[in-house]
Image 1 (cartoon, rainbow, N blue to C red):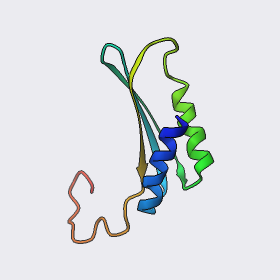
Image 2: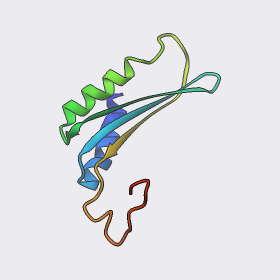
Image 3: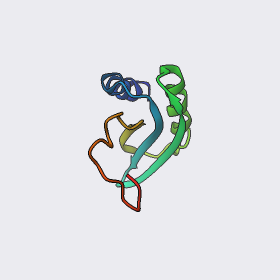
Image 4: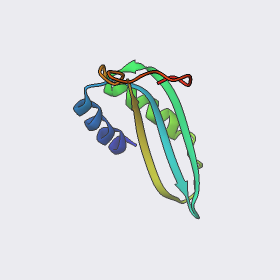
Length: 92
């Protein structure tokens, strides 16, 4: 989890947008997939993001073989994301 979080944070720094949510995808053998997601307060704090990722990892079933582990950080929208777009009834 520490390695995954470090890699995700490289992308966060490159984007320059704070994290507002995390999703952990766990694919167990034989291909059963479970996701754990959580919104978090807007932050760039590496220690806070790692702590929240480790909280999600606590939901991994002990002793069950894992085929894939993935972590995704949801970032705030870029400032110019809505420029030139018309809102719809469903939102942006």
